Length: 298
Image 1: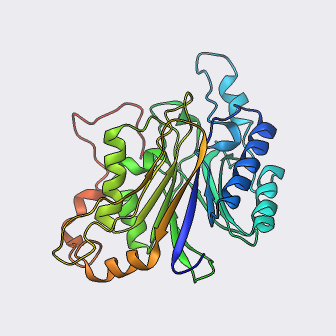
Image 2: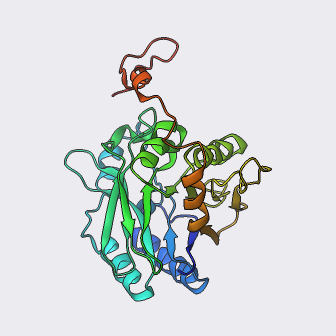
């Protein structure tokens, strides 16, 4: 990394289902391609260790068999990518079904270029209306400093459905995140991409998302930088850095962190003019019609 530039490789791939070894081999190959392209960090799509394999709730024992695919943070799968990060001198954000007390978690571990795990985040907004009823939700939004040649970059995570809640990115901004990484596994249409773009704009952060390629999903991995007005009272600019098509490939998103930091120091979004004393309703746990759902938890 040089000149305040960080290059994030969006690894847009199709998974090999529950074949962990095949997913490992493919992930390794794509990380090496990312390194050859000059990436500082490689970002996997959601739950790569199991290729976003789902279970059939109607099939006896399928849920238990799926949960048994969970791995620990010291599993050979994770150790492999720690060693690879050290070998390539490149950070890797690897995703997996994490073994946990009770039901497993949908997690991502950020491994720095020295091969050390600097942050593990578990998806908070799990899709409990769907197969993720079989996972344990995460309980916090954390931010870490990722060491880079030109100094640390503050990084946080959202996973897929997390990005559909403005609170996720807002908390990460308040915790100091400058760059939010998002492993994904769903169709990315114009509304979800516009929503993601808005997360960058309203929090003045960079955002990068890696999705599964077609035909498993539709690709369209994307990144936005959040610097909407490069000049005070000037014209708006398009904050899109890159949007992929549907095919498998490594897509490189280049973020100018110095530009983002300068923008955050002078512009009016972020935390300066908020009214937190008026936001109590946001943490009220009551749910009223039409939003009552029988399967929702808190």
